[in-house]
Image 1 (tube, rainbow, N blue to C red):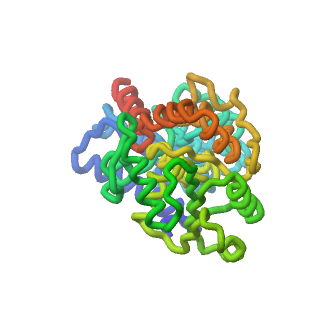
Image 2 (image 1 turned 30 degrees about the vertical axis):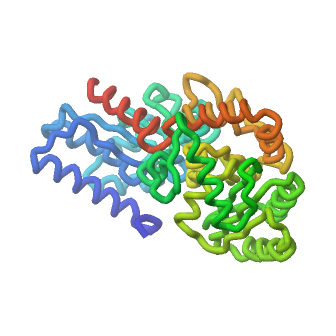
Length: 391
């Protein structure tokens, strides 16, 4: 493992101190030192207390925080291992932990000693993160609120781009969607499904890590059957309960020509499912490890969440006051909130059939946004670099 050992702090603080020593001894003068999470957050106090006056007066500090679940809580005396003064830093406005005051909090130190802090969150705006998701760091984040910016997660555009995806029989983009219909026909042919390009095709990939209620999953499949849509289920999960449920369901529906089960992951088929489907089922819009909604939008496919906050024919709506603060919400959260975030599978199917032109406009609009790592996430970080470089 990279982390998860009793001596994590000793190892990471040694690495951080050695990195700063290397920069100074090599005569480097970087514009920005970019830190990630608590593991390198100790660079902040190290830089300002020790290295700022060693030829790095023009350097600034940026911290990207992927979440606040792990903060690096340690005994204050361990700070001396990398040359820091525990008595100077074990104070409430510096590294002292807000809850367990006998300890120091390394991530808190990163926030305090950074010039900007980028918080990674695709859906939640800044005030929600600070108030509800900061795990006791709320007082510190409020003091340093002007430093905080939010950036969404992304996906690898070089691999997932329908305009140049070499796995597809025909490429397409938001300006020319003709290739999507060709991909749909190719997908139906490959899986032996009836080739009605006008029918609604729903794709789903139960990948490793998928956490979905088995009963709900069965309800989804049976509901899709009643709605007379075509359904593709690709299962690459190793979870025994899910596998057994899918096998049982496959036997139950073995004579249904509109449902296809795929028992092993296929890279080419995976790309074709995103390109050829009208709807892609995903766990949630809140899980940063699930890139399914991002990829679906890129391929002109509607992502519909079937996780814990959804029901087969209704969705417990997101709080628009939490999601749609224009000054704080990411572009991705606005797209989801204004399109598919509050939509159940049943409603999506009905919308496609009753309002096809409106549905197509919605799809094309969502598809036109760059939600990859090169999009908004890049822009937020670049803006942070520029802002602190000019301080």
